[in-house]
Image (cartoon, rainbow, N blue to C red; front, side, top):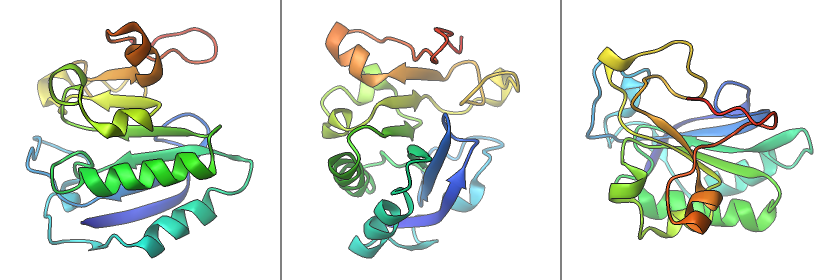
Length: 171
């Protein structure tokens, strides 16, 4: 597995200050994707134990709210094992920090039996669709995408959309 880049102090991919990692490789190749440099599975850098250690170290300050995992496609069959391992180790170190994941796969169609749900707090699902693009959306780029509260969804056995601290949903 490979990754494209790590952002140490990211304020655009989830709430608060976050560490973000962009996984390498995506077969969806959505039209006008904001990260086309992440599509090639052979690009980027090798994802290793040292990469995980670096992320754990960067996320240690209290000001860091959590980890954001984007792509490329972090839940592609070539990437999901490494993504799950990263999320599991991150939550073991920081149980009170959140893990957000962006994926083109659909929560209710493709992810129901995946171990990653144990460690993800929020999943933004669905492929970016240019015709559905909406710059007013927070945390996603097109109206077909959903910002899903994973813990509440698992508990309710149905999709529950994420609400911010003020009780506002993003849809």
